[in-house]
Length: 152
Image 1 (cartoon, rainbow, N blue to C red):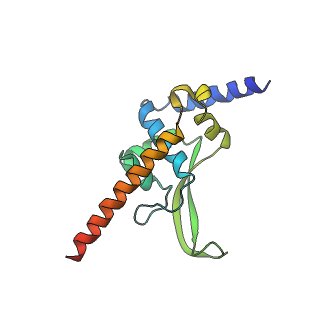
Image 2: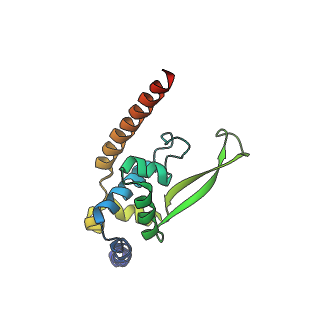
Image 3: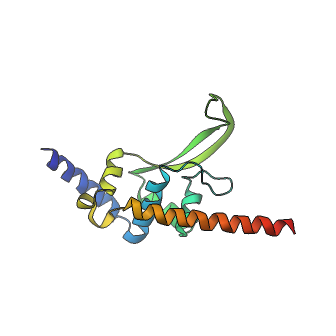
């Protein structure tokens, strides 16, 4: 019985994902989103680690492309505007907000990381983790070089 429940859900997720014609761009974007779920301290200047701008910087796809992908995924992802707190112990927001991309359903996450279920939409988080880490280091190096250039 559980297998048939998954197959119905898998068909639904596959149908949702098939709306976007470039599956490589789709999987690359989702791979970064999944990896960033566990990363909270990297961010592009002025952005949160899971913001569309940060995802665009890491993927190198550009913000317009990321927004188009996220629009195609709007039934399984969400772009939230959350309040910022000055520290983890503070219950009061500091008046600013951050944009972040989240998967709307845990079952969608589970679908993406199971190759047997997701097929061409499979996200190998270990492989993407390495890619994301390398890209973050590259972006950090570029930022450091730009900062050094400002001091001269």
